[in-house]
Length: 269
Image (cartoon, rainbow, N blue to C red):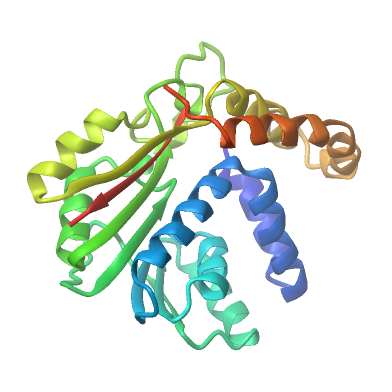
């Protein structure tokens, strides 16, 4: 089972209608618990810089969801949003030009090859590092790209069941990943030798969050991979299940998970 074919269906629709793209961002923020955690940390980090104009690097922007959020909620700021997929970057450029977001720049970049130096106050990297085999090289590039005292916010699956890694069937998303995920200790072992310090670490998708992900994301994805006709019944599925999913996400979001299938990790240079 794979995310990308389904993602491409959404991409083909939202690029035609800007208003649908905004609604799509709002739905992503609502349905994906990781977005709840990431947006909370972004708001918290923004307060550290007070009224300073900050430079942000959205490393692996995808559809531009977090760039859209940061443009609205983290001003004053300039944002460089990059992705290895040039077609997604083109779509994002077109959309953000239409909404006149002049402080955001989009470029196709490979995180293994970037050469930015002492440029950014904050690097955001959401659900990207698990796809890159040579993560050590990317972490080195991130360290070089940050200004002194700058922050790196990583969101990734964890080693505790991330991506259904322990599944014995064909339903796992792990086929798209270079690794299972990370533990707090593994991230520290990779980042601390470079000069990073741990600012904050939190496991996400604990007991309740994992159940919410299965009901709200995994099962619909499975159906959509079987047949795109499921788009027709998807609204009725969520009408029945989302109240339960939302309650479980709220429980996860408001408690401290000892372990979870995701991790939010903030490092400081």
